[in-house]
Length: 223
Image (cartoon, rainbow, N blue to C red; front, side, top):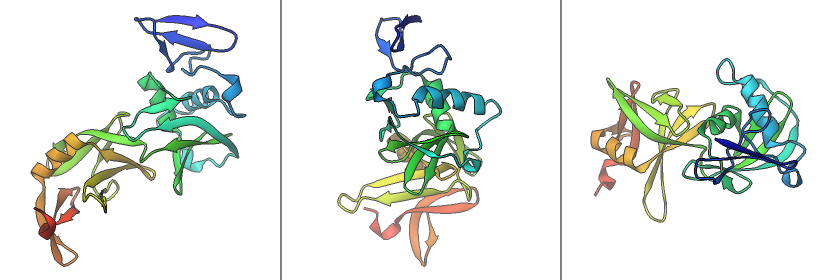
């Protein structure tokens, strides 16, 4: 990989010569600096703090209460792609760094370090469950970030039904109030192994994992 440097920013170029916003700076945080668009907190600074705090596993963001420093132009699209300054972040390891300091407070999402807290935009939920495995009677999901979660009491599955279309959207809890949307191919596989069971006095179609039954749709509503 070739590095192109200037006084304003540092951008990496892939083998084809195209710019990659999953970039590497002098501190190897992977973010190019564009001072005119930054708040008092930069993505570069957040990435550096995340890298330092994550050396022994996930940082304890739930214990940190730093001041709010404004919003940062980071946007997680519904398909799980992370954007910075309107461009996809091209390095998975950088996305994982950011995800490690991601926190949800109420309905809002923030990147949090011991000294600063910045808001980011999330279209739906921050992660996508791109696959799952059956481990005995349990369902173990893997996200686009590389996290895994065994569905059960601590990692429940829920389904939202679109009132207009009737389309179901399934989610699984990953960690600390952060969820993953289960992608379509995985959901089709889950439907194939679903079962009917009593729930709230009626028969429901759903999934079983971790000793729990997770209802998806009332049996009577299945066509």
